[in-house]
Image (cartoon, rainbow, N blue to C red; front, side, top):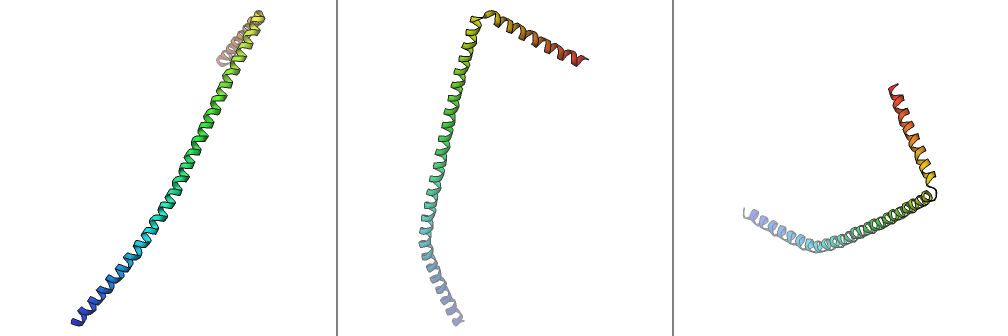
Length: 119
């Protein structure tokens, strides 16, 4: 059994040497892996940051465009209102006639709708 013990001790030394070799190799690779991960992470971070920045710019441009469209719409509505007011002041009886005819037609259409439903 002494021979067996010597073989086991030799195997243990070989295993220890192999583990030390693996440990040294892994430490070197670990540094390289950490470096690669940090590089890829920083690239990913830059891409995400750029996409977020681009999204904000797009949203800001869209908001500005909408604000401009609303302002133009308000301006156009005011112009149309002023034009109608000017025409009504220039010829008030025409405006009264148009309003009366419009009211008559609206009542006629509503009454016709009621008659067709009850029939």
